[in-house]
Image (cartoon, rainbow, N blue to C red; front, side, top):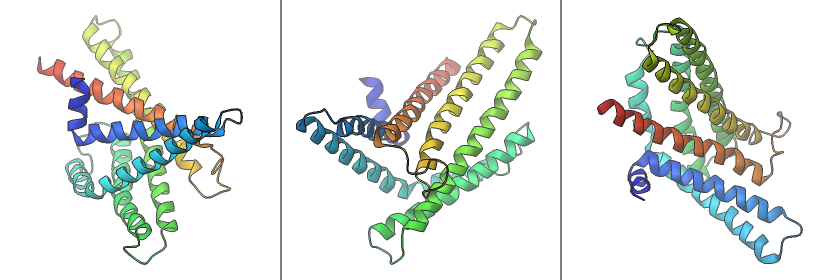
Length: 237
């Protein structure tokens, strides 16, 4: 209970909990609402869960109205990544930051258009948001694969030196990058689903499958956040 309270007290932690609840509700609601043999009460519950999921998604969109400055601060601190030892990781990260930075104002315009605060059509802006999000996810996958390749090289160079602590540290990093790849691939599958019809499998995912992919990604995010907190505690100790 204390861990959950600490998680909810932080903005990033609360967002991950809301995201998990959002996709989890869509998963369960999608399964219940599509069952032909389910009774009426279960189908109604499924529809309510889908509505609840939509409201949570809208909540996250509104909360992201205030993320521009934090993203800008991160992009500014990373800069052109001169601290990165590998040029591939460096420039992939820079491009990822550019895509993420552009995503927020595009989403704000789309949200404002839907809320009828400005007189523009939101469709093109939501499409641009999806393209930027998908690009960021694809770049993130490439970055993680590159980092994994570098970690494997480093692990081979450490073989036979007897430094068990170095080996375990590298293995933890590799597991984290593998989880990042799985998480980004799950999100990317949903991003493609939300593209215009005719692009790969766009529009073909049922609600439960969108919920499943998002739930997998969200749970991995919670695991990584918890693991990151544990690593920080270990390093302090």
